[in-house]
Amino acid sequence: MSQTNEPTTTPDQPVRLTTDFADAMPEMAIEWSAQESPTPEIVMLNDDLARELGLDPEWLRSPAGVEFLTGRAGADANSDDATNPARGATHSSASAPYRPVAQAYSGHQFGQFVPILGDGRALLLGEIADGDGNLRDIHLKGSGPTPFARRGDGLAALGPMLREYLVAEAMHALDIPTTRALAVIATGGRVQRERALLGAILVRVAASHLRVASFQFARAHGGDDVVKRLVDHAAARHYPDVLALPQAERPLALFDAVADAQASLVAAWLGAGFVHGVMNTDNITISGETIDYGPCAFLDAHDPGAVFSSIDRQGIYAYGHQPRVAEWDLARFTETLAPLYDADADRALTLAREHLAGFRELVDGRILETWKAKLGLGGGAAVADVAAVHAVVEEWLAMLGDDNPDHTLVHRALTLVAAGGRADGAGDGQTNGADDGRDSVDPEVAEAAFLAHFTDGDRAKEWLETWWELGPDADRMRRANPIYIPRNHLVEEALAAAGAGDANEPRNMDPFHALLARITEPFTPSGNPADERFERPAPAEFGDYTTYCGT
Image (cartoon, rainbow, N blue to C red; front, side, top):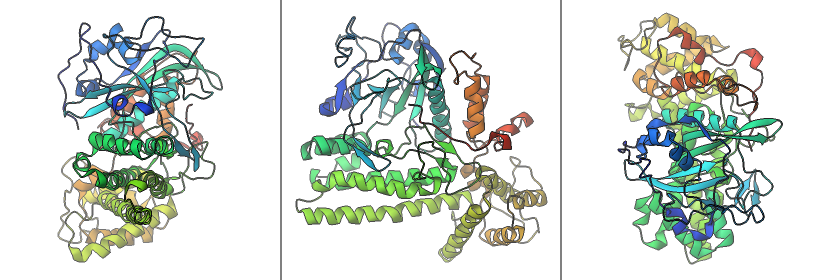
């Protein structure tokens, strides 16, 4: 986690963002300006994140701060030209705090290559150093059409932007690499979708917005020289060890670094029961952060085939498919880099295949470690126990797939079993990290509650006996198994109350704040009986859940 910067912004001395990406890759950046918002109003501001970036939350709430957050600070007067939208507004004055650009990228969407995608409704304002000295992008979503908008209006509705704020903060609290939301701003305008919705801008913070699709654009439209510069830029931003290598070795080393980051990310998704929903190559980051929460969802029932996105009709991006989709996306990544692996084309192809093949073993290993942590196993297991641990994990996954218990509740129930100790009193009566007051539970009650999640109680009890023999660590399980997640029905409830469903509805942010409070402390019981509703799965009347990308 980044250290907190001392705020440096005041109304008289606003922050200045760097132009790291625009300077390094000018052929992939079009200078542009955000569309002016009629009556911008901050709906959510992430004070903690602002301080990490050295931004004063009070200043951000001021008129000057809101102008900064909506991308209009320093925009040249009268530079918007409705008769020539290809021009856009500029920020050329010396007082401008940033020089916004729309980033170019290509990409595969549901397996189909699109030569030019790019930021159709987004802008990179620039970069800022956090408390650790790392550059972080400040980026707008829903700021108006750019040259990449195609036929879109370039706008965003309040609901999807609040959803991204909520889920990104939950992922951050779960220690899953993610972009984050600095602010959600209601523009005062209307967005026409199936009905009139409130317009909004998301101010997103990311390690960078470099994607596999960025490299696809560089390869398709620039060739070796542009790809080489993009490799160096990506290494400088994210992987200094790669940048320290001789230039000829950097492309393959970058692939390995990104593959490693993506393996860890996908494993973390599976552990949390997260379904991204749209793993196109433009949503696979070079940094290894989760990006784009449009059609995402979290599992209630554990179902490897779970699909929520309305546009994923073939189930391509189902929960259990995510590791193999990541492998496919990385194959597209290595295609862009392979010509730089070796001057000999055959040797370059061999290297590409060998290193891509290594990803499957890598991601499967990370997934295994994730499940071991959720089961409290493996932290101190002897080498002789490795096969037994693997067998217990495999049977656990089979049980989950057969009975489809609630993903979060069943792991929480097992954590309480570990915390309470063995109900039969077998063994020496000790468990690693057993009940220390955080989880006061009777062993027999805990075991009965756990077994109730499965239709075949004998099978589950037999598995439990084998699991006990491996010495599960309750403390490890507490750190791996959240109590609170952004359950889909609670997210929808919060968004509806916030007036996200209709431009004419009143706005009540209380349910949003209540949910946010729980999911940003996901491993800590609130102690309030009223908060038990945040633990429960959706009621039957909620029905099947479908998500939409929000564009």
